[in-house]
Amino acid sequence: MKGLIERREYPFEVRAESDGKLRGLAAVFNQEAVIGGSFREVIKPGAFTKTLQERRVKALWNHQTIYPMGDTERGTLVLEQSTRGLETEIDPPKQAPYSGFVENIQRGEVDSMSFGFEVIKENIQRGEGDEMILREITEIRLFEVSPVTFPAYEGTEIEARATQLVDHWKASGKLADTVVEEQLEDRDSDEGRTTQDAGTSDPTPEPDEQRRGMSYRKAKLLLKERTLL
Image 1 (cartoon, rainbow, N blue to C red):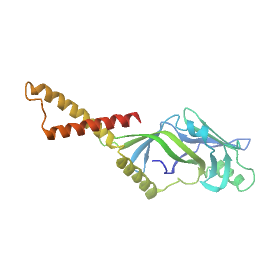
Image 2: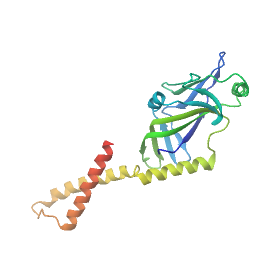
Image 3: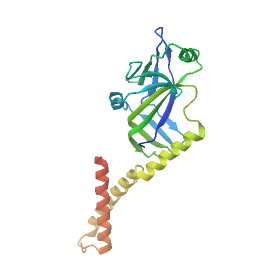
Image 4: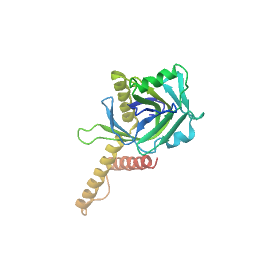
């Protein structure tokens, strides 16, 4: 959903090196997570490619802009995609309070990483049977990465945001496409059977049938247009 800033939190495999830098994993590829009890989500490899080429990204402490820890433009934040996910290297300031932040990580009091982002491209799939909707994120606009004390959103807030996303997919037709496609395929099968069974009957459709046929053809054209977008 464009315009919606989201956050995700992962265990932060942080190492405080002898050079004072923090290294870890900010996002994980191909790891399914349940978001707000409403849908499953997977970040696909390459989702950060465009944003890393085009955007200036910051490292913050607990998402707080008053505590900048690194900046890709200044070389104090390095972000690279690996087979695992988004590898992060932060070179924080040496003075307080940042020296205390590094100690918090060294002592294990801060052990998670979060990132703020906007989804640019996604694939939404209906689950099979009792499975939840699956969201595959293929392109992300990244704003910041942050070592965090707690997850960015707790309990009811992330549930509300997840519900908002599902409602948006329904309203925008992203969940309807699969149903429409199945209905069109069924109609194709039914029309084929009707043609075979019709034999030498009158091929001229009644006006109501003509209108239904036009609506059906229009729906097929719309579906093809969506597929090409």
